[in-house]
Image (cartoon, rainbow, N blue to C red; front, side):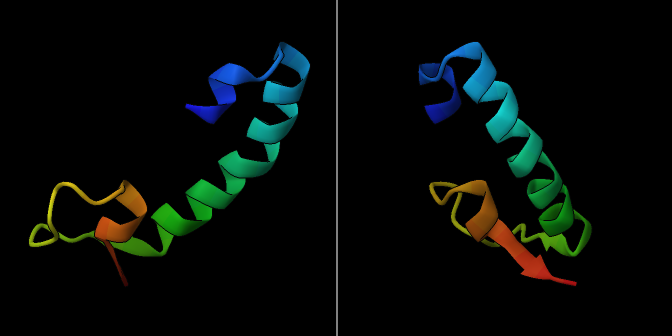
Length: 48
């Protein structure tokens, strides 16, 4: 959502930093099927 408000160059630069960080979190966590669905995706993950 915030990325959409940025100009193209800033969006690319920020995505280059955030993308690997998101992948790091996803690689080291699992989806928690019992977590409330109203929470953001990163709060519905559990450590693996």
